[in-house]
Image (tube, rainbow, N blue to C red; front, side, top):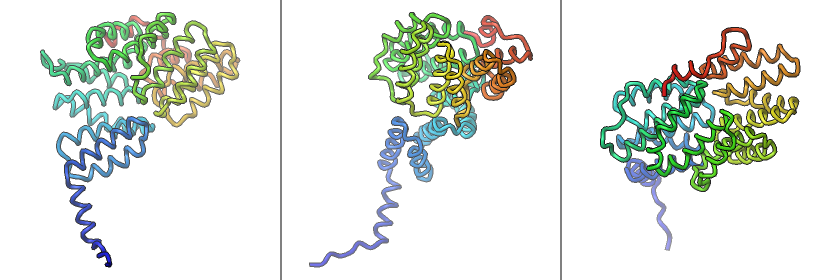
Length: 348
């Protein structure tokens, strides 16, 4: 008995039929988000390009677009991510789409566009009262993520006040409540309260942190240890964070943090190697504090011309940051912005 070969035309018809079938679309979309969550960003983009060409249901397209832009941002394709964020911000305002607003905010912050991120919030009343659970969660995420925009502008007290205002909301959201101590610890560590920061991090259930952001939690603990001069432990924590790093921005941030630790420990030459590696890293968004510290390390060694070049990089790469104001002051361009002035600028 001989088998009858399947005509190639029939296989083609079957493949086309499958690609037009909505359950297959949902499966592919789920696979796309699964790849993103596990840091397979290039696979995410390949799948998104396939899905873009299919007749997707209307609700799928905004989700697909957000995942695609997050993947671009994670890979360091900053211009592409920012261009998409501007479109998302317009869509979010026009259609009151909170997930799109939140995505645009994250993309803007990752690109160092903190004012653009905060502008999305202005004039937005939030979800209706009482809100739908999904809308309440999305609105809480919007306000939570904007805390980062505020402290990157140099307004640590305003950021702390914003975070405190969210505490009651965060308690009712398991995802947010597990991240809440990480954000609080980052602020405490950078305002000289390292022991309080470490106590806050003791509340984190590390097993429930999404792998995409696990490195940032380790970096927050490293910054807390740095604040209390436990340098060796801080260094080990950064290396642990680098092992978990999936986004290119996380790797660069870890290099700068290692430089700050070495500088604080009194090893300027070692610190400069980390700062130089961070500055040369392909991801060049944000990073003003690291570049500023690089310049300070160079100045401490008497390499003043190189220090000025590092400070100028702050103005180029992270021009909206509080670090940019301090770099401008070191360059004699203007006086630094005080904490009170920064708080008044961004509000609480």
